[in-house]
Image (cartoon, rainbow, N blue to C red; front, side):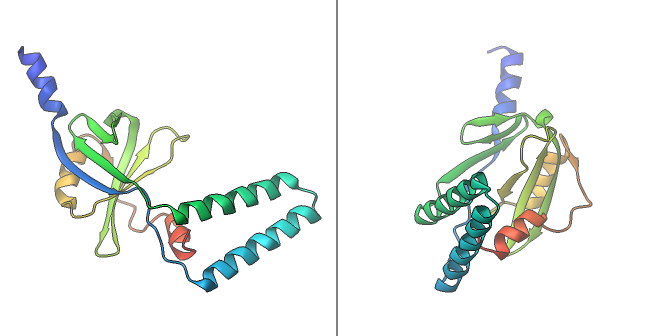
Length: 166
């Protein structure tokens, strides 16, 4: 094996490997379902009253997706973090695709790595750290990406999702 091939092989070796649930499955009580279906009903009344049938279709589809998602068990996602980038379930992302990162670590409820893409079309990657050492992960990432030190709280979308158990 040539020195160049060995160097490429070393770059691909995983520094960190772990798996996590595809999404958090929240427990919802009867009150949540009553409020949820009441809100859907009100939105449907609004869609019919304003003759906005596309909105009505979107509301029905959103409700169906949420109910199906609740019934299914989340898949396990495997993650590999190394010097060449991030690999999630076999899909590789080079560090050059990311603008920056930040880690929010307030155990036990909040232990996440956030990776922001340069492209505004791609959503932020939220990766649960599980039992990983956030300082070691930060040390690896800071060599390749800019760290956003201004972020100290969860994004509003995550707070909204947790508050309303979506």
